[in-house]
Length: 112
Image (cartoon, rainbow, N blue to C red; front, side, top):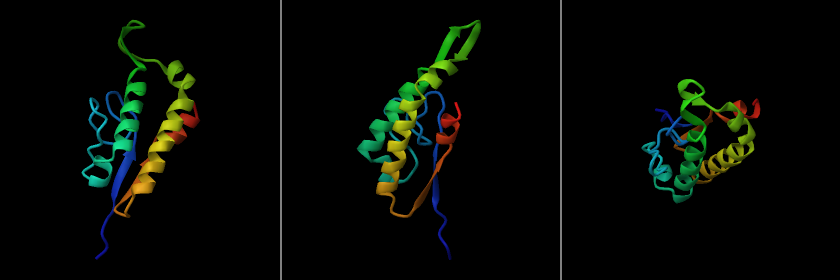
């Protein structure tokens, strides 16, 4: 019987680190994969991206209850791309073959 590998998604959203799922307050990944969830490097990078991406959301701004600042995201896409790349590299370094990484953000960011 072939074991199915877990999928670790890289995806950005408000108050969510790019490693799905994760704790926005600590940056701690909550994938259920101990190698990932306990990795200090991933926690720090995940938290940094969460804070950066979440800062693009503005409340009670531009005549809307919640407004996403696409221009700021576009201006800082290089920073996001670098941090996400570091996350993917680290995930690949620690991968014991039990998971695959599905990066849903790099192509989207490159297209901005």
